[in-house]
Length: 321
Ligand code: GTP
Image 1 (cartoon, rainbow, N blue to C red):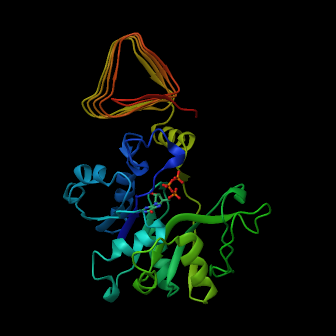
Image 2 (image 1 turned 30 degrees about the vertical axis):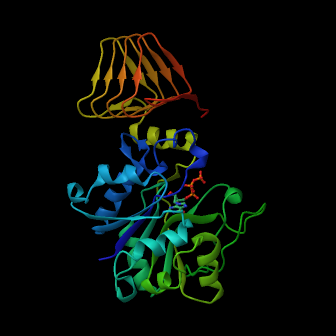
């Protein structure tokens, strides 16, 4: 069965300060890290071995996921001392297994995407077309902020175009792609390589069979604070979601898609709206919290007002959504 690679080593600069202590893919949405949601999606498609390509704050992943047995999966970790870019990361991760002789395809996930698309169907499409590479394409209302990917009537990719004022199509790379091992062999080892700017355009230029699998499913890139909060709200809905072992004091009102992690304690008479609250957080009585992100194990004193803030056990910084 295909092998998964999760690209989770980026700096997450646009999400700062939320990524000061947490890699972007480990930020919780609807109570679970994005990476965990992707692992569950991979498993559903029959992918049981996944390599996490880590770099920035790599040490955060292993204690949480271990060897993957908790999820019935086998997880391996590739650590880049210096970030190698998306392409270099894939090459480095695949080197953990004997990929050159592998008949298995590699299913690669950008680690910052929530997608409900059918990964097994994407794999079947890849095989049916005898493709070397197949990317999931999604149509967005306004493609100007993205590179766009025109295809022919059979889904064969014609070009990879940079951002432009008048995109020729609204189809964009949705961040989940399937590579045969031959494609990975061609990525130079130990070098910084961008899959989007180098590998894909080169494959198309040399007339290799690269296909676009189009599926309009739930899709969100959680790369900015506003997008991360939207992703969490989309999962939670209008009310709130509280993880196992959490306690909410009398008279407290939680709304606006607020999520609370495992074992957190909210005092009495608090109002919490549109906020992401991690595991083991303790909030005193009579607090008002809105549009804020409280990292695991942070504490909030009674009678606090926290509006548009990032709170960690050591930091208290403004965020704008
Ligand atoms: P920004 O700094 O805000 O642009 O975020 P980012 O650094 O995460 O970059 P981007 O959103 O372009 O990355 C897309 C995905 O690839 C994310 O899941 C990143 O974690 C991952 N990624 C980006 N660069 C690297 C890298 O050098 N190594 C690894 N292993 N993953 C990377």
